[in-house]
Length: 159
View 1 (cartoon, rainbow, N blue to C red):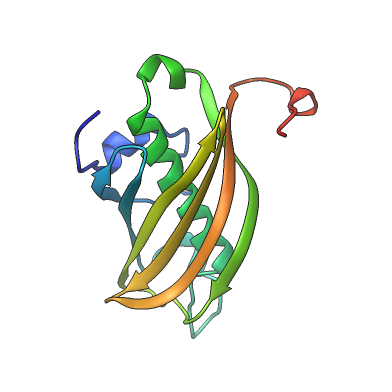
View 2: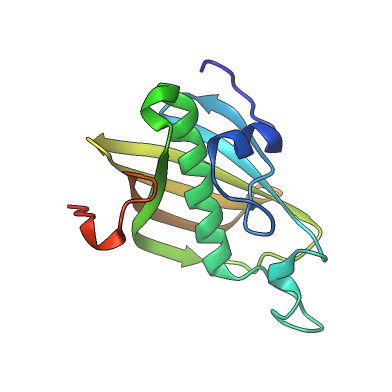
């Protein structure tokens, strides 16, 4: 808590995501439980651009949304008490107002400026803007919830 930068290794200590699905490389400019900037290094070798599209690779929009979710989960996990977050997962509940304005091409640094808008119990609402070299590539709002690990999905009552 209180640290304004998280490395990939530190993010892995907070999130269950592993290769190849861990998309966030670092979290910077952290204001605990409020906002942060996540960095995703989009490479030609990234699994999600290999077949999307051959000869003209583009990061799929769904992976931008996934990166938003991972960044928000890391921000939240970093800000709350470790004991509160142990044996928990963050599940995406909804994605709203997602707009993809420009294609994200390999060999770039995708910056995700995220902000926690509000929280109510275990449900959090966020918004974010994805940029490359300060150019807006995408933006969205989304909600997520914190749930116990290993709980049967059909037992979860999200709202």
